Structures are given as structure tokens and as C-alpha cells.
Length: 145
Image (cartoon, rainbow, N blue to C red; front, side, top):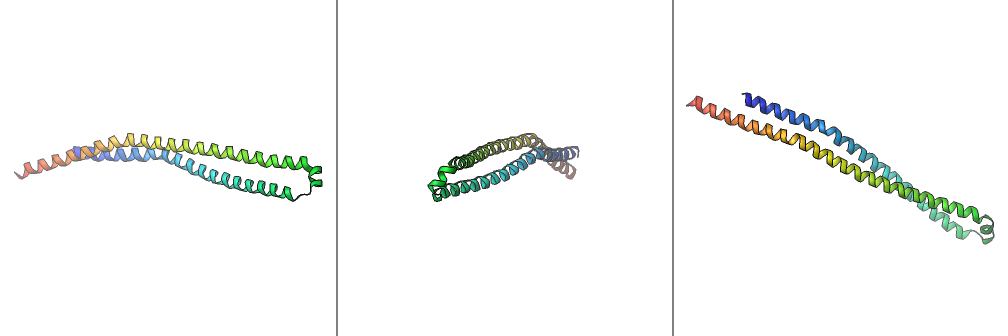
């Protein structure tokens, strides 16, 4: 009887340990989901900025030479601004990807730590349950004999 109570207690302890470790894993999963959304937004913005830059460059060919000579400095500055914005967005995209990789690694580490804590307890609980059932079987045979 005591072995059965011990087994149930150990299995409950393992379950509580598993649930408690889930908070850390969930934190990293939430952070990863936020980073994926941020990456999608950055990629959309990068695509839009690239299309604007292409449209600007194509429109420069349609401008007469006389206007280009007069406002050439402003047009060059605008083209540089597009290029700068694209470069910043590319760096931001790279940083987000690195942060996502870091978050995935941290999530895997948290999951491994969760398993490392709960699995031995669950194994001991299962072993205690097996011992309790064997003891119960042996005592029934003795009582029947």
C-alpha cells in the first residue's frame, strides 16, 4: 500500500515538475512567434522599399536632361536615402534572424532541462508503481494460499 502511495506521489511530482518547466519553454516560444511576426513585417517593408527604389530609378530615365542637371543633387540624395533605408532593413532582417536562432536554441535548452528534471522522477514513479503492483500480486498469492 505504501509503495502504491509512493508511486502515485512520484508520478504527481513528475507531472508538476513537467508543468512548471513549461513556463520557460512557453516564454521562448512566445518570443520566437513575436520575432517571426517582426521578421515578416521587416521583409514586407524591405520589399516595398525595394519596389519604390526601382520605380524611382525607372522614373529618372523619363526625366529630361535639362531637369536632371538642375535637380541632380536632390535626385542623387533621394536615391541614396532609398539605398540607406534598404541597407538598414537588411541589417534589421539579419539581426532578427540571429535573434530567432538564439531563441530556438534557448527553447531547446529549456525543453532539455525540463526533460532532465521530470524524466528521472517519472521513471522512479513508474518503477515504484511496478514494485507496488508486484508486491500486491505476491501478497494476494500468499493470502490465497
